[in-house]
Amino acid sequence: MNGGTAGESELDLAGQARGPLAILYRELDAAVSELGPVCRLSGRCCRFEEYGHTLFLSAPEAAVLLADAPPPVRPLDEGRTCPWQDAQGRCTAREARPLGCRVYYCDPRFDEHAPRLTELFLGRLKALVDERGWAWDYAPLHRHLREGVARGEFTPPPPAP
Ligand code: SF4
Image 1 (cartoon, rainbow, N blue to C red):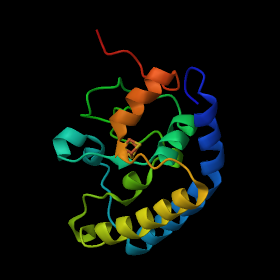
Image 2: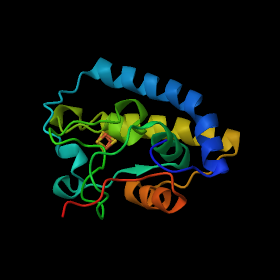
Image 3: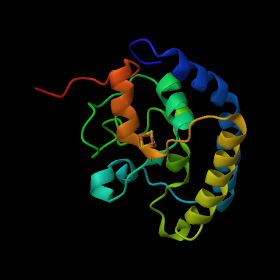
Image 4: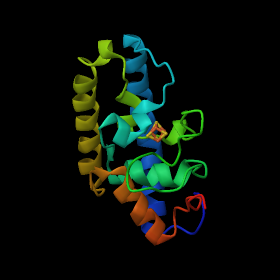
């Protein structure tokens, strides 16, 4: 966890979801790797406003991200950028990053595969959530992060003066 004390239920969700999500993430990473999309480390995919997209994730993904990611390196903005993207454009939360981060590539040759993999793995995630009786709460990253701040589970660095 990065900064503060998590509520018992959030810690519980992260604790329950960590193992099953790790398996799902590993299988998704393997499926992506087999298709070989090229990442040139432009970092554009994590600058949401510039790239024109919003990262959505479910409650268990958010709980694991907040519990296991290292301290964020950027201030929390209104949704333009991700707090875990470093100055070189790299992700500092790779192990804990959610499904959407793992399937999104700017390689145009991957365009036809990303929606199929997203649907397949989101479906598996939803089935897991239903089976375990967890909250789904599929929402933009920054909404989860603002709630994490309010609960004292997430402490981003202050904005530059
Ligand atoms: S968690 Fe990592 S991969 Fe996902 S948006 Fe943030 S910096 Fe990018």
